[in-house]
Image (cartoon, rainbow, N blue to C red; front, side, top):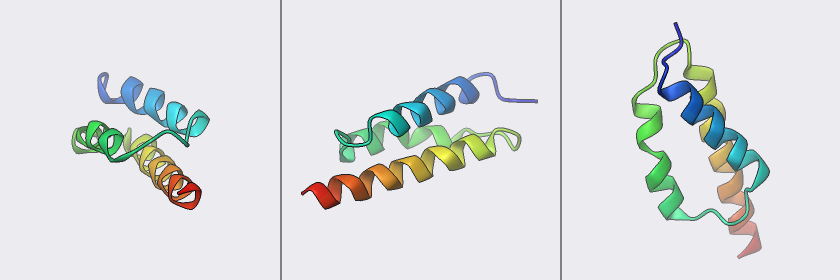
Length: 65
């Protein structure tokens, strides 16, 4: 059973990170950090995709700077 609260949030923020990777900073990481802590086992791939999207956007912003 998919967690009702973590699934829409993780899907929304993963798509947001996928579309807008550049203006993210450390404050967005602090904002997104509680979501992987509240995952169920079935929604784990979405949180994994979320963290990979954040790491990719972090490296993109590091390359820009």
